[in-house]
Image (cartoon, rainbow, N blue to C red; front, side, top):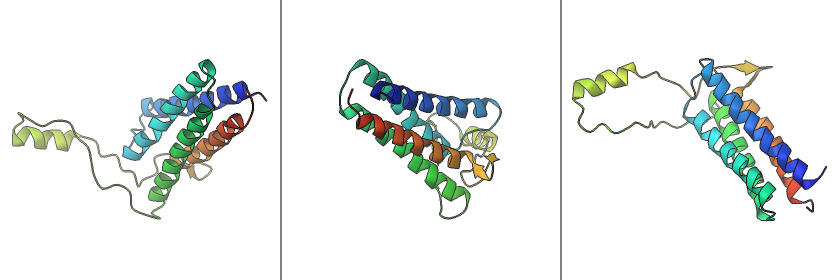
Length: 152
């Protein structure tokens, strides 16, 4: 397989995984904080794949491998949180609250859905979405490494 084909395959893999995450979200599986963290490296890998196909630079496939491995590592961490092997993040993020009354702020907090990182929302063959992301992302990282070690 050529370097170009490996890059296409790796970029397409990240595109499909990211698209799948949005499909699950559209089906009602709201993402938690760690789910959102896993999406960003896929977006970076997609951009790197596009750049790699336009500009032949030796560093780009290695950066793609790093992006895929990063989302894989976050997936492992997230799966560990789901399996109660370790604790996940305890912080939350919110928008600006300037100009809101205490009652309005409390109403907004109470109306917000609680999406927990330590609960498995969906699984296939006993592996959660985070676990599947980790497995598939490390496979994509291997494709990126294969591309990086091939001559154009």
